[in-house]
Length: 473
Image (tube, rainbow, N blue to C red; front, top):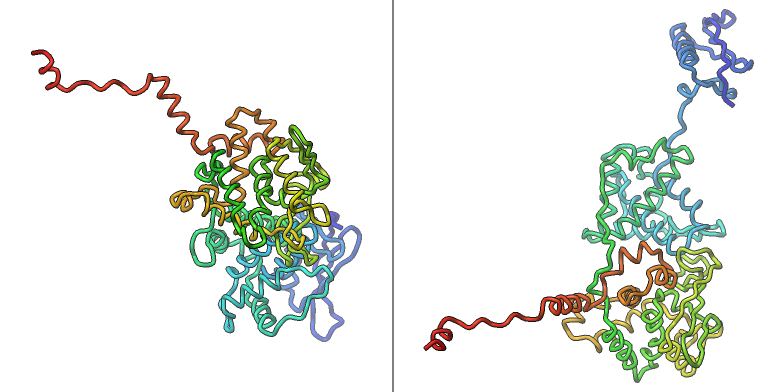
């Protein structure tokens, strides 16, 4: 407890000891305290500090008898110690992808905040130790035995890690922020990657303030601006309807004589284009979530996703996470109407390939979840078949996610109400209007043609002077 009820007495000489000593006595909230010094000068200095704090209106601790200004601060944790403490707090409640991002950022910052001490491990070993061991939380509380190389590397990190309070120095903080902008090879990271890592770092430092390790977030003391993030989708990645159909057709030829790899995924990619689904939503789609009538429009009732994240981050040994929809509560459902063409494709897919044991429409030949690396390779093969060499070398439909971009852009450009598009896509209206409205491939040509028609077409060619003279004779 704290109190401002303080009484301080004059210094008293202690004559009972062989050597003279001097005692400072005071009370805090009626509780007596004293401290003995060998010289009167030391005692007078201590008493003066108490009096000064009392006159300044400081509160005194009823346990130690001292004001805050005279309380010795506990030794600051090292960055490495605090980062591990933060990880243990955050890990159980974080999604697998968030765990991966947190691990990556803590590893990077730790390598920056190391003092020059002998015995430093190689960069490869250092990163392996931090990324694979130090910043992976064990839910059972018992960490597996570390190989000697890893144990030695982490023992060195414990000794070489700077104190957390060193981040108060603007030069140190700026060095950390600058490191977020670079890849391992020294090239520039994407603005989105920088934003994500900076968000993790800011969260760590806010926690340090929350638990009293720092008095304020040191980021605020540095005039540093992150790279700007492009708000609009690159229109070069968005296919038009003809290109989308050609790509879906090309998928049927991928792996034609080997497990029908492409044909198994035609309907998967069609869900991204005709339904606007995110890849992880399409991968997790189950037959019991689908309304597929024989005629007319159908409906997909989305409520689970299966993103690929890796065994290290899920905590249960599974490669894929099993979670609710992005930016929605755990059990919220998003209904998505789908056109008759997609309904027919899904019905054909189920008839030809069946479903997995848990009802998933899309699975590999063993019934497992289709991984992002698998469907990404298949998509790249389809691009090589469907696109011209110039288009293949361009960003056009460079990733499966670009099919979703094309879907939302097409809906908006067709005049569908933005609120309805937002509801189907699981985005906000603001995101749609900011990112998607200008993306449809070929939209400029349509606009140019309409402007040309408005202006009355090409102007008539004027005859040259010689033709005019010849005609006058």
